[in-house]
Length: 388
Ligand SMILES: [Zn+2]
Image 1: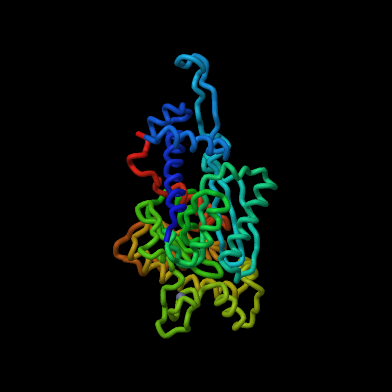
Image 2: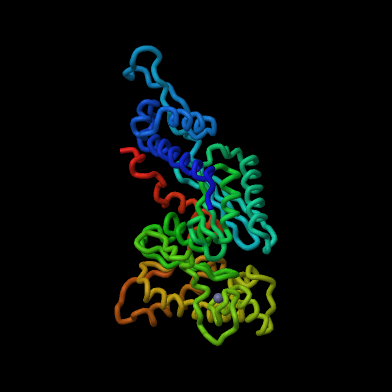
């Protein structure tokens, strides 16, 4: 249930967006021009402008000499603050928070990370994230008053609407703290969006992305848009079942891909062959050093992943398959079995070029994707308030 206060805040946000959008498309404008373009009443407009100036999102400027002026004092103009328009991306993963901040020109200006307990409750996650943002802002001179919106990447099924799902209090806490809108999505999907916006898939409109790490996740971009699905569950490649009578998975299914090729499964497979390794990084290092067992375990797992990706390719017909996560760092050891599986299994009699490539953006991909989410969002301004 939304309270009257919520409704008022939403309306204010819509008015504010109308003003910001007019300034974005036209540069500096007088208050009279803004009244005309936004259709807002003088009183509403003046309140919003004072608030934007107070928050550092807009600045007051003098008209250039020679500008036509009416009688009396020339009307000052309102413009976007060039130091404003910051976008914050937060990736709240298992055991780690990452953040990225982009400026008004959409360049990432800073990134940071902090470890936290793997079983942290949603509100504890929100507090830790807020703490990290404030610390980074103070240490690196980032003006949080210039913050325009926050994108939030979360683990699991994430519906973008602030519905009844468990992430709502977390997103609300962050929105309240910074006084800006918050958009949420699954963090593997956001990594896919980031690769399609700035990374390995930036020239492609149809992309299959898989993140191969401790868990196995993914995201699909179709026709240039991130596929969220009807329930926010699109892209869960790790939970494609390879064996309906296989071991139970934490998703409730059986024989899932993640249970066979996720980080822990790979470490277990190495240990079973007499090579105990201390974590995923050690496994990747061993495979990089061409240690036999590590290489065999990884390439066998890559064949399993390739079979699932071949099915996905058959269904979605992408131009590009992007592999991210720590395991992708092993290059051809991982990519070749995937290429082979796709070549042999995904409509082999309909030859077409489907590139399989390593992700570009590294560990900050999801935090950057959270920023990309804000840039790709439809403006929340009703048509009658949109500037011409
Ligand atoms: Zn599963």
